[in-house]
Image (tube, rainbow, N blue to C red; front, side, top):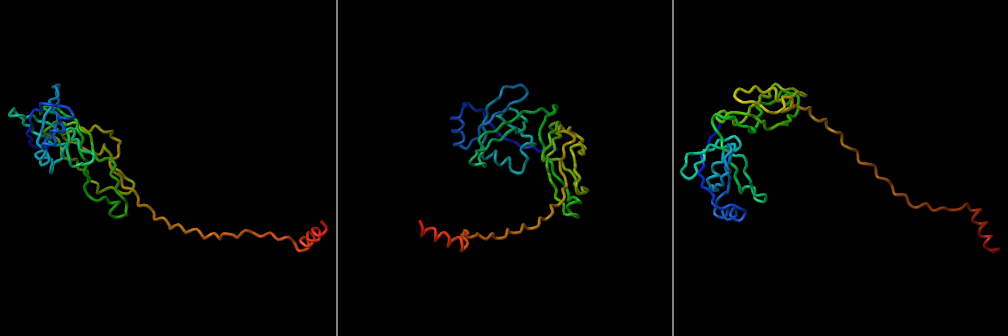
Length: 224
């Protein structure tokens, strides 16, 4: 069952970067709501109300009942939350996508692995969770908060694939042969690399000539 939340919004009268900065200084978040061929409608929401709404919910899979200035609520999904690059806690823009109860939508849902694999518990393996979200097509009322996958039977070298998921109320759009998780063997401990032996720095070799040759040169010098 999909999570739900409520949010109040107002029509945004002015657009552009300057107007958006002004709204943020007033504790507001500029946004837009679109979908079903309607023209995108600029809106503004209270920053504090939006922040509180997002606590404890999965933004990507939560249906938001948006009340716009007293009009009947618009049911929407959050398509994008833009945050300040320097202050990630600050929301600077919100995209809402209107949905209809009888129309399937496409969205990404997180995959949650349940249990400890046999290969990890008994043989020291490591669980590699490679695909953390699945793209699905589903009616709004049937949106799952997450997709659970039991991994307790996995042994070392074995994987669970997209094809192993048995959906009841949604269609998985990912390639069936994509691995979701794998239990890999523990890495063998590498033997410590021996420190290379110190290489003695050889002193420059002093080349000495044989005594007889040296004496001969001495005699030659006297004659010269």
